[in-house]
Length: 140
Image 1 (tube, rainbow, N blue to C red):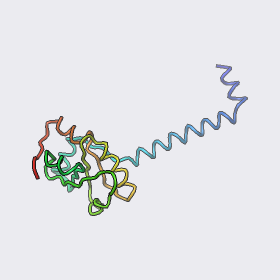
Image 2: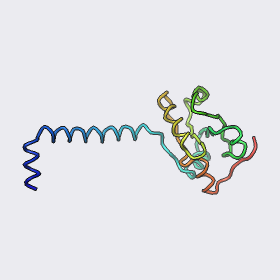
Image 3: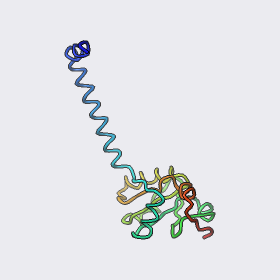
């Protein structure tokens, strides 16, 4: 222990640099965590659908949407390029849904950087919804 104290006393500048670096990393992580879109569970989505004015946006292809989607969700296919189709929803609470949550997360990050303030994700996407034995609507 005394060797560690001696090292710290003899290398005060290096120790200070490490402390500042550690504090910076922690602050960056805290800021990034606050900026990340909030993920919600299937159960919370059901509650929001019943009690709040939200828009559930399914970003999968039209073909996948027709094979099964969440009741009253709107299909706005997103292939990773253009976010302009989402502009009409900018001032609404949105819950983005894809198959497993990865594409919706990428889109949510982009939308938040464009000023969308009320963007949420269905945690685990439609796969989790189905695993929770919640209903899907087939067809249009």
